[in-house]
Length: 210
Ligand SMILES: C[S@@+](CC[C@H](N)C(=O)[O-])C[C@H]1O[C@@H](n2cnc3c(N)ncnc32)[C@H](O)[C@@H]1O
Image (cartoon, rainbow, N blue to C red; front, side):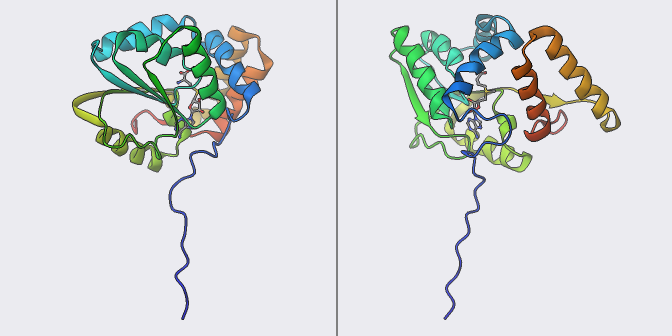
């Protein structure tokens, strides 16, 4: 009798495509580069806090928390934060940051959108900053369904992610323009290389899909 062959059907989110954060050096570089690209991280934290209406008793999950800048800042405004990331190196940096600041209300979870299991605990807010585009579109949708189930009724999701809003015939001009802008703004050849990899190999999608 033939045995049924078992297939792995879930997308392997731990095997990240593109400019990966799966080594310690790269994880360290991200924080410095994010600053060069995005300016003052504190301003971003305040914007999200106001937009979500975060209150002192709230619980929040930061999925794709990276080096933990947002998690450490927002932990001071809510009861508990789950800092979730597929990269152990990013999580290590996030842990060090929280420890240095004496922050004790963050749990660090090595998982991703598709594998996070909070054992039926609910969140008031989920935040995904520059992380959802690491999943192909179908798996983005699976991720959103899973987020829906970890949010309590009336809970809120905040996504900040690249999305393409140009005519498809213009893609070469637009991507070239974006790369030139990053070059001009950062003068960081490694960062520019990573930005090109992000364009080429990661899964930023159309704004209308988002
Ligand atoms: C561009 S960094 C952004 C980090 C942080 N949110 C920030 O804004 O500084 C993307 C992060 O998403 C993580 N990541 C990639 N795929 C993921 C997934 N499927 N689930 C959760 N995190 C993921 C990466 O390890 C990385 O730390």
